[in-house]
Image (cartoon, rainbow, N blue to C red; front, side, top):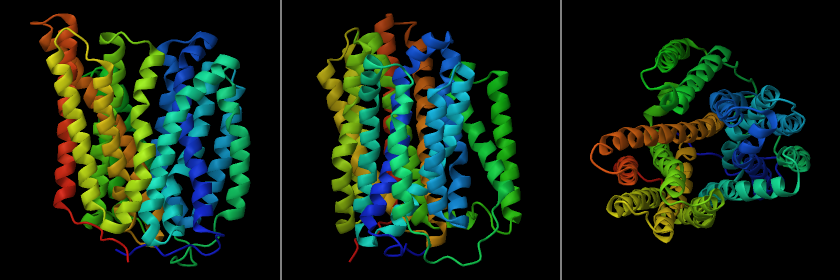
Length: 477
């Protein structure tokens, strides 16, 4: 497969394109983290149950996940600039609708609308940057995207808490309006109108494939995110699995016959693309196992207040923010594989450290500085891994498939996140029940978490071996 062009014509500067795309990425990331802080407030305001109110976050994630592939391919077909611009505009309008919601149902509907816009932005962000930035600077640029994601995750919780302390809940959505309007105006002025390397005749959009892909991914996301709550053998979970498998089978059948398919399965024949995709899935599954479990450990066993838990958890996105730009720039000089292996190896080591600390603590909680040390290693590992891995994947695809590749990257991140959470919950709950027969409640819970962290470490080790067995994208001249 061929690399992306050096730069997209029509853009004032590659870094101007980066700045606009980074703004959209920051908004989508910020909104996924800032809202979670307000969920208890929203539950009280609308007199809603936890099961009802969680759909404010879950619906947003489901919408983004289900639409990433279709909107990535749509960007390839009709222009990434147009899809990104409309996505940013819809996200901003969705934020306004959220602020004026008067019930749980209307807020969930507004969040779904907002998620459509966020998906249009997310599916084309990496492709726009890859298209605009010269190959010799691709790793640096994608490393800075990782920093932007880390910044959004870091700023969201404290900003949400600050807004709720001085204003009412609608302001967590209204804060998006001036940024969104400025982003749309800047994107219209900066993003290139043409795409190099594509045919003037636009291929037909694969609507049937898009619908089936959305159904398949939403079904899988729903099963992974709700399976532990429903029960893995419950009728609802089994029905979700059956529906997902059916949608997958129909999707494969339709794509093999489509004139211009949403996904060309030959695309995955190249290990230079396939390996980073699978490694990304495994990395996020390992990462979000720890992100999901550590708050439970700190609150239930360590006795920390929620605000203190938030300050501990900020270690991971903060390390992403600090390490990603340097890792991306370094990958432009030394290649991608060694840094990706180092990153996943550190992630594995951090998870193993957390498992060892918790396992040996017995009935006593692990000291917070020790937990922070483990999270420090995990966060640094992810910062080293993500930029070179993304650079490797995006550098292996032809220019007319950059949107699809970017959508696939975002999809694999989301699926890895949900699989990691599902795996962590299943291992922790299952092993805790086993240990409860022989140990006290605190000790049993700690041993259950130890096993869940070990499972996550094994996932990271598998990703390390996968990248190590692959081939590196060489440094740029």
